[in-house]
Amino acid sequence: MSAQPADAAASLRLSVNGIEHEVSAAADTPLLYVLRNQLGLKAAHFGCGTGECGACRVLIDGQAVASCDTPLWAAVGKRITTAEGLGDAAHPHPLQSALIAEQAGQCGYCLPGIVVSAAALLARQPRPSEAEVRAALDQNLCRCGSHNRIVRAVLRAARMDTVDTEA
Image (cartoon, rainbow, N blue to C red; front, side):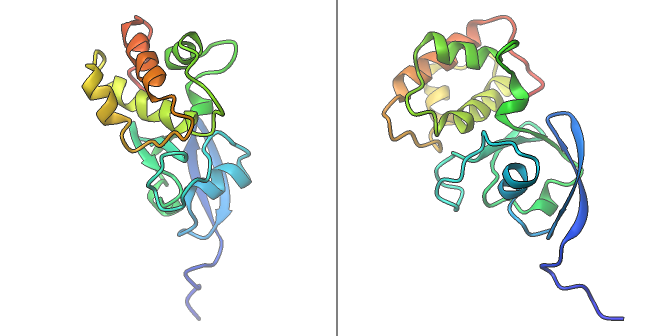
């Protein structure tokens, strides 16, 4: 009997946004590809492909991680939350509401990654200082130059009583 090649597709179970999914992919496939191509979750975007820009960030067990360089095997058995899992139009997450109130979105390409990074911050530090917000979002690049409005939005969300600390 021969060993299965490392790049051979396997059936793996993922918990994404509270729903169990069975996916077929090689264990070293980037999580981002499975989220977008198999599960149809488009919030996390491909940016740099090296985990440096933040456009692909998702939460894994509450920690913001770059899904473009996270192999699928590293996410199995963990709780994955994408920006879609934080809220929707009918029930937005306080961060989403605050971003709208502060008119912080420009093109929106970076915002899903910023939202999950900010959600991770607020889960571990519900009332962060401006410096803590800036440090938490330091690995999220925004080419539109909306950082000051985004920081104000995160601080606004922190003042709301309904921030989900389970993100």
